[in-house]
Length: 197
Image (cartoon, rainbow, N blue to C red; front, top):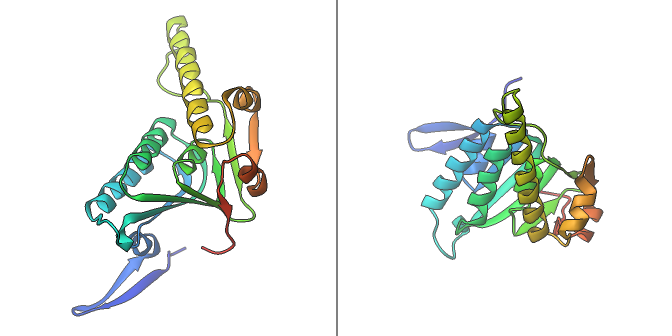
């Protein structure tokens, strides 16, 4: 299926933008589908471009991430989270479907965190990842990494929500935690619900 485009008149003729590119002109970035390392690099590049045109007190100082992803690459996602938390731009995140796993962590980077009415936020403890070999030493290293990243994710969630680390530990140890918009607002995960973008 061909993605529809947006046509804009220019002095040298019409230009057709992909919808994602057209929205990017106004600071919109889409986080959708599987979150890969390549997608993380693409988003980091987009943040850099938006920062380069930053001007205080103009409409160019806002970045909005629209999120509909079941998650994926944790390290790439953590770097996107860190870039969003340390940019001069105002950051708004909007869930349009699912914000699962590392996509949920990226959602927490926003100062304004909005969810559409029929969406979900999801978190769990880190799963096996990385390059650990099937040796005892390799498995030991993988286990150590999993513990490290579980503690890191608990730090992030507790710093951005009303949930304390003990509560988060109970919620995610060996299980998944799902939140609809009302639940997410009650726990400080989201700041509001919107019905239109």
